[in-house]
Length: 334
Ligand code: KG4
Ligand code: ZN
Image (cartoon, rainbow, N blue to C red; front, side, top):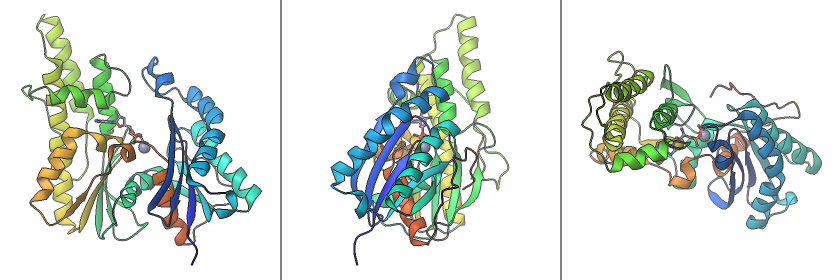
């Protein structure tokens, strides 16, 4: 049996990325061109600027990934590309590049859901054991996903308003920290104490849903009130208090779901999985259980194409193929 070689392509937001993965688990190359510097001065991702950068970078990034891995187009078993969700103009660059290459070289095309990609980043580190639970925490998503087997996703809880990363970014903006704010809040929180009382949205007792907009507003109000009264508030303590509120709910609900669904493994996925506080608290909470906890290394938490190739391998092996009608789908369901 010859090796399965998949080229992954990811352009859903502000990273242009390409990667080569062998047999679904072995990383041969992983190239990420970040646009963060271009979006920083606007305090967030500007869709039109993102698309333009993707157009400039995509060919270079793909060529580099192939060269680094030492593979040619004829070696590829499939091309896996992010179909959605994301910014439509950004997605289209990846989708159209993938379609062009697939057509020109006669290579099978596979469409991948961005969040499935984040979840499958974990498979590049260790085998997955089912049933499994994924705690997905990114800039656009906060979800608890139950997986009976490979490629099967059941959302058992999700945010009713802001995503966790979105709340981090909005709170960071209030504290006048650069975009993206998550890592800066994380950093401040490391040197702060959670002394400020902030709400935790537990919702209904049996719910696995989340809500972060109330917490975000509470942080903003706390800051405004302090400024009005001329009181100094330690940004470190505020960051630590906010972070503790987020983590308390994430960890508690993930733990409750993992036990209720009797899973063998829990994986954490998405940009907020890079959070130091969250990683530490999850390790603490799951240490005392026999549920295996997997958290990807930092470079696999944020957007990359290795995770798209890894998820693409599952789809490919299930016989799923996309055709030349494939389009970017900004609101794609998992
Ligand atoms: O998964 P991702 O790279 O992009 C999306 O698919 O959304 O996630 C980006 C999000 C941003 O909101 C960013 O602030 C957050 O992940 N993030 C963090 C940390 N690193 C990135 N949030 C908290 N702590 C971090 N260390
Ligand atoms: Zn992402």
